[in-house]
Image 1 (spheres, rainbow, N blue to C red):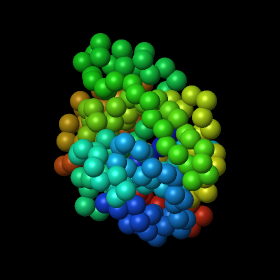
Image 2: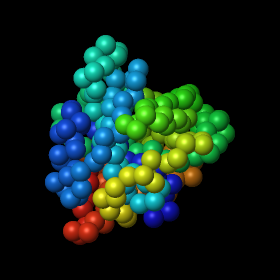
Image 3: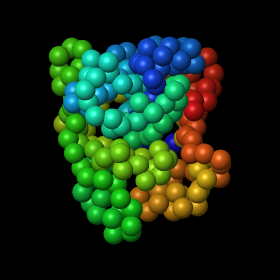
Image 4: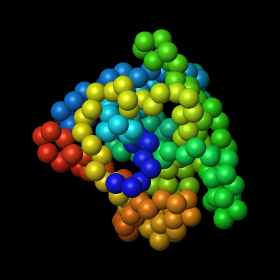
Length: 208
C-alpha cells in the first residue's frame, strides 16, 4: 500500500467497548496508551505494521469538564467505528499553504502530547482534526518529530493491506485528496465511510 497512513482512528463511546470490539475482530487486545490531557479523550493502541497503528479513542471520564464537541468526535458515536485516518507529513506548514491556495482548509498546526503508562511523554505536531473538510475521508496530518513512532512499541494485530472510502460527493473529495498527493480511492456512497482491510493471522478482516 502506497498511502502514507500514520494511523487509523477507531472511535468508541467508551474505551472498553472499542477495545472489546477490536479484540473480537482482530484477535488481539489493544494496550492502553494514555490520556490526551486538556482534550477530553484517552486511547488504546494496536500495531498494524512497523510504522502504522490502530488507535481506539473515546471520551475520558476523568476529564468531564472539557468543552464539547471533542477534538476527535468520539463523543458523537453511539457504537465503535472507523472514523478518521491520519497521514504522515514532515512539512505541515507547506502542506497547509498548498491546501489554502486551492480553497481547502485543514486548520492550524498545533502541538499535542500524551503521557504513556511508563511515564514517558510522546509529542507531535498535527493539523486540526476538527477542520475535517471531507467528513473523515480527507485525513489530518501528523509529524512525530523526534518522538519514537508508537507503532514500534506495540503488539501487532496484523498488517494494514488497503484503505478505501465512500462519500456522497466522491468526485469532490477525490480531487481534494489528489491535491494533497494522496491516492485514496473514494467511491460514491450514501454516507461517508472508511474501509480498512487488515491481514491477521486468522485471515483478512474488514474494519469499518
